[in-house]
Length: 42
Image 1 (cartoon, one colour):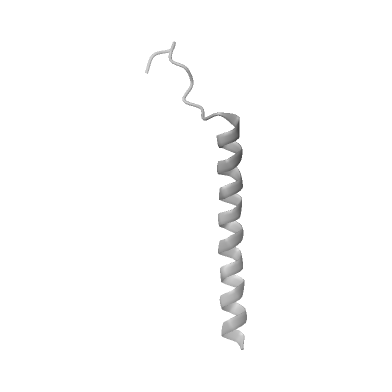
Image 2 (cartoon, rainbow, N blue to C red; image 1 turned 180 degrees about the vertical axis):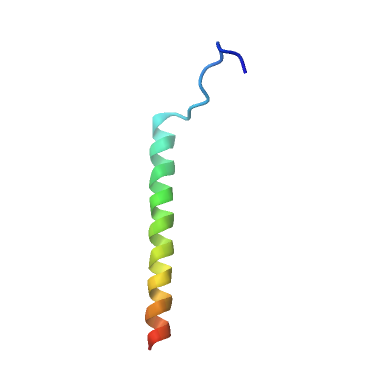
């Protein structure tokens, strides 16, 4: 990799989308865990 190469940074839109998907994934994982606990308690 040369010093003159452009940074390997994805565009802003793509970064935002990746962050949103990551948050959604974490949220879904938490929901699944809570659901399993609730269903297991019954």
